[in-house]
Image (cartoon, rainbow, N blue to C red):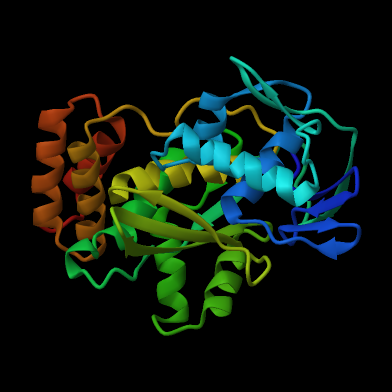
Length: 313
């Protein structure tokens, strides 16, 4: 399967470039809020089918609990942006949802990264999450969420994420103060066509915000996810990355297996503890995880690795 390519959509008086997240109308840039932009792209990609409100809320507002009113507002913004005052281009299907009813010409722009052989899994590397909340109690998210999301994505045969161990060893080799381009270059030296995922977590009213982008890419290529807690951010990021790296792929189920949220957080904290060299704490946390969920396969494998010869008590 080839790596993600950017798309150019031409419809009516409009032209949309996913490489720059830019909408143009009659050749002039037309500003559009990020979520309204994401909605328009989703409608363009799935223009051949009616889309229910539930699906749009699930696929466009990943990780965020919002009302149907938020969808209605985004639809209004899209209609205003594309000049659809009479709602004939973006149609409301009463009792169903919405559908884009306009001829669309779609083109492939230059791929963001070199092409991989057909059906080859797409390489991916997550940088440690940047904790910009100012809350030191959330420092476990740096490696914990990186490892948790990467481990889940490894379960998708279309993806080939570098393990947390490989990523951390590569970053140690270039030094803790290496600039971002140097870290990205080092990771791509291991896997030349690798998408590198840069993430930042911040506080916001009612919860947390996660900004993420794929590197190399445009400097302003940030996208945002919102959730009440870091674990929901991780769940949303795993799903969003599948869509970003494998555009046009079926939505599929939630990337995360269904586990107790507390067990998943303890697993993430254990991964951070392993990175920090606190093997004793990691073992204790993994024991609690497996007491809560004996069939939690990823936690079982981590526990077995710590039990193997070579790990200090």
